[in-house]
Each structure stands twice: as C-alpha cells, then as structure tokens.
Length: 387
Image 1 (cartoon, one colour):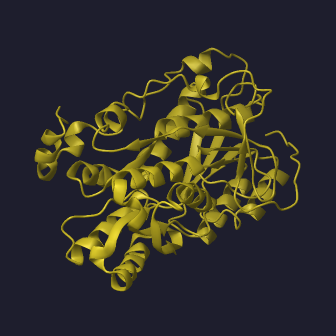
Image 2 (cartoon, rainbow, N blue to C red):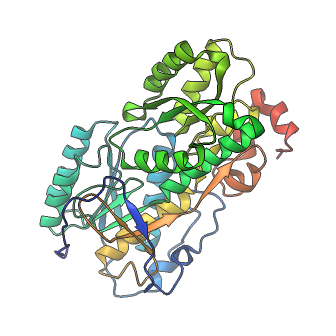
Image 3 (cartoon, rainbow, N blue to C red):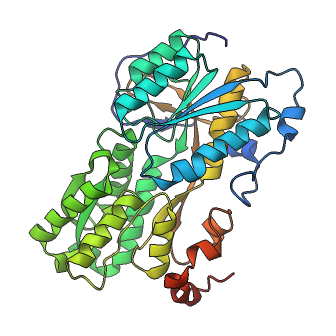
C-alpha cells in the first residue's frame, strides 16, 4: 500500500453537485468498451492484465455493500466487481466482501476490520453516508484509498462511481407526467422517497420535483427509513386513508422494492385499475410487474458499467494510475466534506413495456425465460417478448 494525502474541505450543501471539467480529453465510458452480453463474466478475460506487465496484480479489494433487500447487490454488483478485479489482475487479485444487511454499525465494524487487515483499497456503498466518514478517515490515515460506490459517502474519499442520480429522478418524474397526459395538472400524486440517510434520496427527489412541481398536485410526500418496503407500505396505507384509494392518480416511488409495496397496498384497498407507479433498479420482480402493467416503469441503471467502473478505479488506485487521465472519471462531484471528487457517472434508461428486450434482455441481465414465467407468459406475448 502507498499512503496518499487528500485535501479535506469544510462542510458544503448536503446534496452533491456535479461538474464536468474541461481538462479531460477523452470520454469516460470509452474506458469501459464493454459488450454487456451475459452479465457475470461478460467483460475481460485477462487481456487487460497482460497488456501491462510490471504492474502489481497481487492486490486485495475490500467491498462493502449496504443491504440484501435490494436484489441487485448480491445478484449483480458483488459478482461483477469480483469478476472484473480477477480479469484486471490476471486472476491474482482478491475481493474481500461484506454486506451490512442494513446496519450502519455493522458496516462500520466491517470497514474497520478491512482497515486492520490492510486491504489495498476499499469500495463502499454506505448504509449511512455521514456515519461512515470517521471510518473513511481511518482508512486514509492507514494509506488505503476509498472509493464511494453507488452512494456518495462523506469523508476524504478518493473517487465516486454511480449514476447521475438527479437525472434518475427526472426520468421518473417525466414518466409520470407523460403517463398522466392532459389530466396531469389535476392529478393527485403521492411521493414515496428513499431513506433520509442516503444522499441519493436528495438527488432523486430534486430531479423528480423538477418535473412534477407545477404539473401535478403532490398531496403526500414521505421519506422511507432504510428504503424498507414495509415502511413504504405503512406510508401508503396512510395516504390511502387520507386521500382515498380512488383519488390517487399516480405514485412516485423512488425504487422497485417500495413500488412493489405500494402496489400491494393499492390492490388490498380494492384498486383494480392501478395508477402509474415508478421504480428504480430494474429488479426482476419489478420488470415482471412492468410486463404485466402493474408498474408503469423502472429506471434501468447498467449494473455492468457501474460495477466494472468501480473495479477499474480500485485497481488503478492501487497501481497508482491516474483515474482521470485513464478516462475513468470525467466528472467531479462535491460532497458535504470534500470538493472536486473524481467521479464516473453512468447513464440511465427509463425501462417500460416497450423496451425490455432492448435493455435488460439485450444486456444479459435477465433472459426472456426468467421474465416470462407462467404467470407472465400471456403479457410477454402481448408485447412481443418471446425467446
């Protein structure tokens, strides 16, 4: 490991701001010239490693993910990062993995253990972005680079890999307005936002409100502790009671787990003609709900590009390569505790019934057979989704 020093700034606004510096001459995603055709094992086969003799490949990457309720973390992010690190290091690199299962205290313990075990770099998706800051400080004191993954953590992090999270909210909000059409202005909308401790929640909400404000009537807005579907269900039952199930014209749900809970509550309340409901993450259950028409849309964020980008950054940091001039970070963001964090922001796509085949099927995230099980076979046939 090689100790590095990183400037630490005073507090700024709670939401991260994004800027694109002019000095970077190449496109960030060109460094990920990937063909997503079968997610795990889809990228790399040792070619990256063999192209650079003399670099250190015997490295250990610590990977900390926040929960198991979000299906993508266990199914995609972990194995993708592991596979990419192996590819980049001629199979000599190791990923040490821990999942906090929703507990910020457990994640802190896992983080401190990785520092004590002297891993070479840590990639962390924080349960609580503020609470993790002291652990990031300890890692930096030990000379261990820290990369914030999916959620922007506080403290002296070295880099950030995620999506344009304000754009995620814009895509969701715009989808609802389009779904409501000419009736949008008089439509009662419930907002089911994410966890207050997640800085992405602020950005999702900001993006969505930029599309919804002045165009719909937002009658209820909730923050959902730890993104828990059961908490979202409690909020939705309250909204149904106060607004009336039949009066809710649409629901902005920040992610798919909460969207599923919202839909169940509406169905339990006797709603047969479900209003448009948004989501995010393209969970398999959500994709099936989109096929059936129960969920209007979800935001598909390429797990492949995000995970491989994080692995590329992690290996580059250990090998002391510039992630900016290697075109891995063409953006910069500000956290509440640090300015000008090098960042890779991966594009997002609104997934609807019309483009399932062109997104998650084409990218190898799910097969048609996985999506179109018996209960969904007729709906799949209706939209031409066949194997």
